[in-house]
Image (tube, rainbow over all chains, first blue to last red; front, side, top):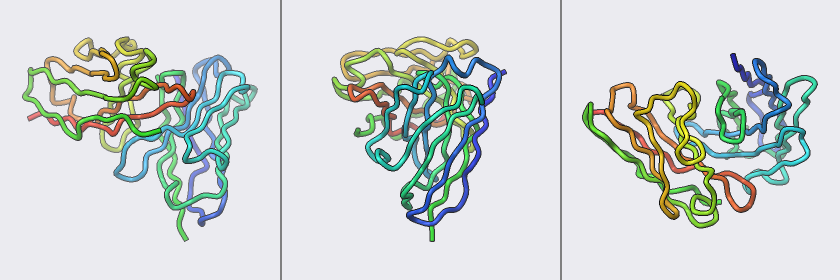
Length: 115
Length: 110
């Protein structure tokens, strides 16, 4: 069974940093692209970033480019999102999703940016 | 990276068919056959319903179907059931090697 478990969310002040993790199991992690997608409270889904299977290629939404970094450790079956210079508008539930089309999703982790 | 345009809400009676549209541009929906559709129930993670415009993942009911014409993709739900009441989002790959989601559509079963 495919499992994706996000962690690392919490309350952080504006300008602060946070690193999210997504632990993967039940499939060959190193064979799949992975995405981060976020959803602000009561709002729609917003694509954040993606990484290819070996980590050599990444892309980002304009709203996070230069502030967020996606990475992966295929030996640890874990996806990461390093978030720096956080803003109030980054407040959201962050989901990781498996595969080019996002065939499986985690339960999400809440990031709250507030003073 | 403007969001793809979806109707805010669509409703139908049980057993009816409804269609949700997803309008983009030639740089996203119209340019690639990489359109996906997701269903999201309140408080839950999204679930993939359609990928690559019209392909259904294993386990998804054949009442769900997808299509595309020009810059507009569509999701059709036939034989509407109470459990189909949820939010639906489209997404597309873009010419910038990024992805973009639609604005979301709330489906109500009357």
